[in-house]
Image (cartoon, rainbow, N blue to C red; front, side, top):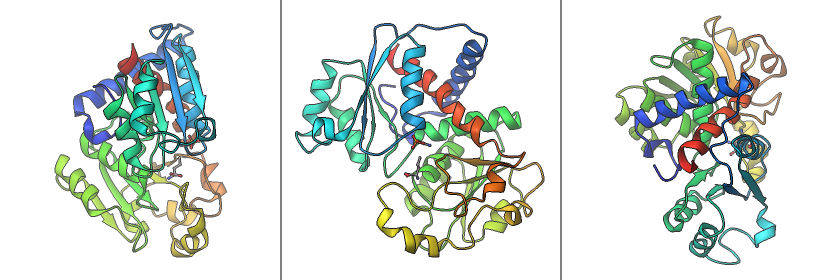
Length: 303
Ligand code: CP
Ligand code: NVA
């Protein structure tokens, strides 16, 4: 495993090992111990889009493991693939640092970085996927439900990067998922086929949020307007009417169903404030687990 670009590139065993390592490092750090396996190592973090959780959790994870992280804004380097080709950036960075993480618009920017870099490349979100988020999410589900196998996720909202990576993780790890989206915002057919190729029938796409949550252990949502889609904001908000995760929708789910959101949340649109703040919300444990998964991933790729 040189890079971490997509859930679909990893075997079930690799994903399980990463989850186990996340739990083990989490316990180690919670008990005050430290693991300095990345002493002297440097991670370059390239961002074309804003970030709170991903940037901070990777930076803290590098510090925790004894290493160092350098945050690079696109304007600092004249853009990714604009001032110079991505293949040149990849080869230059390979001579300075020990790993690259990148958040880009186009997915092919991270795959091209990985193709030309001699060092590990981590996908920190692209328009297509958000694999680090999906792994932190599964870790959170495992902690709260005590199992992964057979867990039923209802993803209510846009068939976007977050939904896609979570679906692929569900397929690889024996979970079930229903994605409820308005017409025109479903997950693409290829991702549905790939997921169901990992585990037949594990993913269902519907236009009915109430049907999706009826037997759910987890109700998950994400913004209706992803980074880069700001010009479509008004149209999307109209098209997604009826898809808010609010008390009414939660009442259609089993009482034990937990609420998840990758954040940032737009209260009053994809989720209501009372649901974010409700006792069944595990949203902030989910955000914390970004750090615990990031440590395990960095250790696996860079130690
Ligand atoms: N969930 C997530 O990736 O958050 P950021 O955009 O703040 O990194
Ligand atoms: N789907 C969202 C996720 C943000 C973490 C986006 O791409 O903007």
